[in-house]
Image (cartoon, rainbow, N blue to C red):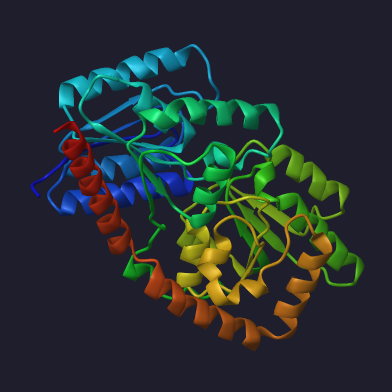
Length: 377
């Protein structure tokens, strides 16, 4: 029942995964646990540096950063050695790996150490399209790492279902602990006077379906509705998306901005669109709903778990015509959209609390420690 020593291992200090880790660090430290981090040194830029600097004072086990590449390569050996040394030096009770890379390091490092190994996928390799070489490789890797995992913490029922279907049912303890947000995030944000009609916020990657949004804007343009759109985020697809917007005649209608805090970005549009092809349980959707932002989203991953009884308002991915109709309907009846947003806000307030998330993760750690201790006696 005393304080635990917890080491979180993850690759990129970006997006929802990073937010999740920072929230856990703050919550676990506030409860008196001793927490440390291992993360990549090459990604995240100044925003990641600032976020990590802000939590250094509460990291009793410190932080270490080293190069971690997205794809598998020789540098992974050095990373596993580094994590092994951190485990040997800190003697943690829990080593919690996040995402495909971070969790691989957490489970491969210091195999003889007593620490229990926890794993949260955050979508990651589970979201690769079935049948692709990458998907087959990561499923094989997950199968190898499964016996080295004492605790599986899935952030959505969807992630657990996908893992079970692709990899199998593990022997370790399994808990579904959904992402949660803080009460202060329910302060409503109103659109700026010069806000665009549409805003997208997220990584610029094919999985985010931004090309479908651009196609829908082109369809609306052909129907005589020249809507403006701001796309907020960074990522490898930016040049292709800019070229696609130009091909569709949207050069003057679409503006690409770099990454910024979500609550700053929310004010840039009157209607937010999440056109993703795959997701786990995205923070950006929780945050937008809490801020009272009218939202159109695809019916993928754990998003229906957020919407609950209102999931029938979600649309299919890769369907620009359906997205066009949803945008037209939202603009035609803004009062109905506001009522929907208000109902969703109350659901998120009741069901997705950060305190609840932190408490459930700590409870899962303790249950796993008790199980492991019992089985060794």
